Amino acid sequence: MESQSAGAKASMTDEERLALCEKLDKELDEFIDGLEKKRYTDGWPEDRWEEEMDKHPFFMKTAPKGDEMSPLAEGLAKLKYDPDENTPLELATNYKEDGNFNFKHKNYRLAILGYTEGIKVRSDNAEINASLYNNRAAAHWHLKNYRSAIYDSEKALSFNPDHDKARIRAAKAALEVAMYDKCINHCQVLLQKNQDKDITDLLNTAKKKKLLQDRDSRKKERSQKKREDEKNAIVKAIIERGIKISNCEDEDDIDLSKLEPSLPGAQDSIVCVENGVLIWPVLLLYPEYQMTDFIKGCPENVPLINQMEQLFPAPWDEENKYSSSTINVYFEGYDKMPHVVNPTKTLGDLLLLKYYELKAGTPAFFVVVRGSKVERQFLESYI
Image 1 (cartoon, rainbow, N blue to C red):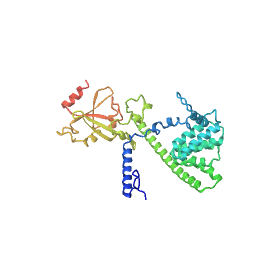
Image 2: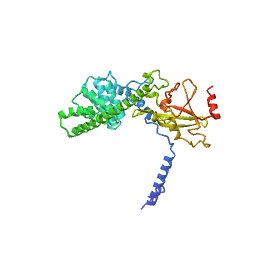
Image 3: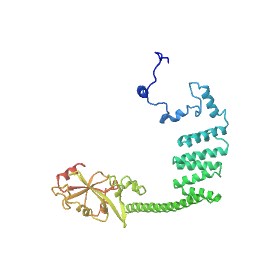
Image 4: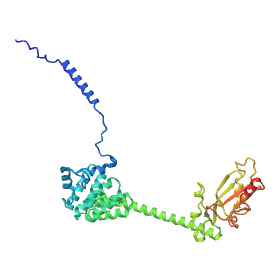
């Protein structure tokens, strides 16, 4: 037997093969780790997907400006979208296919774009138009654009009154937006052709909801009428008493919007009528302490002092200077001068005093200690 030549290599052992594989794996990992890492930027940005889509030969509607199109891109665009190369029916069909492709992949907004372009072609083929509107209605339905789904479904029916899918979708969408009469009408048309259980259930649901809607509508109307009657009663009572309202030229100019309190949080304390008696919000101001008291409901037939006695002694009056027997009460008249009042008179009588004018829907009075320095300063401020 001849001996092996010097250049020949002995076969590798299993251990050597394993070591070589590990070495190669390690070198591959090191090579991949050493590759430059770059962010993927070839996809369509969310904010420009329509713009990018229009650059694609299969989706572009006009030739790009500036750069010349490649022969392949130009050919593809003309093949599918050029009106000179396609009839209106072919164009509408191509756009419909685009919409169907995106609809199948649940890209409903893109599907709507495709169907819309097909509708814009204005093909005179009723079948393709009905299909485009119906399919766009389906895409709107999945996006919960129910009013748009109703509109498109009924447009489909205008091209094909026997399009049951469009009518069913119109009925279901109408139910979602509480258009029960429309839902009922579509269901009744469908049931004339086929007594389908699902449509019957849909019809019964719409009828029940319609009854509840009518009931709520009647309640709302009664409530609105009651509020309107109350407003009219208030205005009528004010006019009958002859109370002067600021910024009102005459009786016809009086309305509740001019009687709403302007104080923060006091809007719900507007004047009201109870058993023929006007109930007013009243504001008391104490110049000495820059404090106020707000009485939410003061009947016009009750002396003002009765309401004030419930406020004294005031927590801020540490010297107990304020009481029903030590105070003077003033109002500022429309002549821009202070006028002292007798608080033992009813609020209704005070509102009828000469120079009194109701402002911001709230009778307001200044309260000072009789004969005090604060009273003199208050009166002098008007000189």
